[in-house]
Length: 148
Ligand SMILES: Cc1cc2nc3c(=O)[nH]c(=O)nc-3n(C[C@H](O)[C@H](O)[C@H](O)COP(=O)(O)O)c2cc1C
Image (cartoon, rainbow, N blue to C red; front, side, top):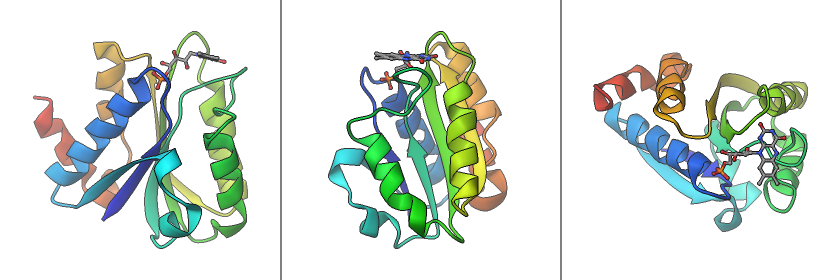
């Protein structure tokens, strides 16, 4: 069971989360989607591998009301965890994801993949699939089959 936890304001990151869950299921694994407001950190930390999604908000930051405090609450307990990060952005260069990824690594997690999508144009959806680096851990390469 791979938990996919996300925050999304206008639905783009939620769509990515849905694609990811479909891909995980398509690869023969079980996946569960959670809005970040519907899961607590202890439930998430039961697992060794999980995915977190959040768009670029503020000024290249995580969403401050729910996702930022959730990520902060995880930080002291990430040692040995494998984490994939994804999210949508608008006009920036993806800096928020770079910062987020470094932050998780510094907290002791192994970041097994990061995927960003410029809003949710087809281009973005495609690069989401194309760049997905879960494959060695979750056989996520099979997600390609869904989008053929
Ligand atoms: C308050 C706010 C701040 C944002 N800040 C950034 C930003 O710093 N950099 C960026 O590239 N996009 C920024 N965006 C654009 C969003 O990341 C983009 O619209 C994204 O697709 C939203 O994803 P969602 O549909 O999952 O909420 C911002 C959007 C809002 C509403």
